[in-house]
Length: 168
Image (cartoon, rainbow, N blue to C red; front, side, top):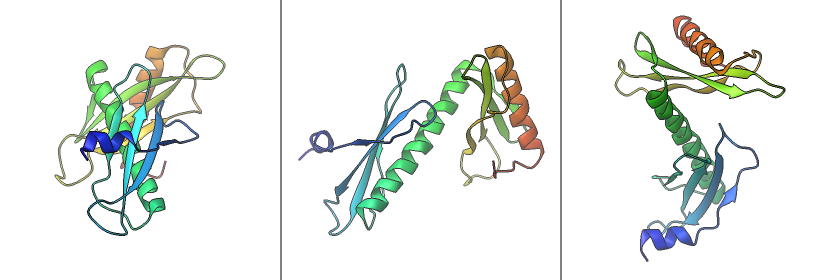
């Protein structure tokens, strides 16, 4: 059976909550190469954006572990897709070895929340490229989208300058 035929028979389950505007769907299948192992699969959908899809490269010991790994991988690739969108639509702010990308997220009741992604473009070669995944600042509402993006870059810049605290 060819890969594309196999993928079409997977029964995907949608996560209840969206992740950064994407609807994440996952599936797990028994490994065809290792008895007793499972493979996780994912796809992430968003209107107006290219579908993010893939399969987990390493085999898992249970269906549950394959599902969890597929969801984690989907979130990672969604974060990368968002960072890539930022590269094409917003000139990143450079802080040392990092780029900060500012975004505006519509707030309930009007206005926009600042949001940012921080990625590493040089420095430690084997460190993850995405240093801070998409982070929304829900405590702040800006009147305009442009102001929210500026504030997002400011928040991200401060986070890098204060030692890139990842506990947020």
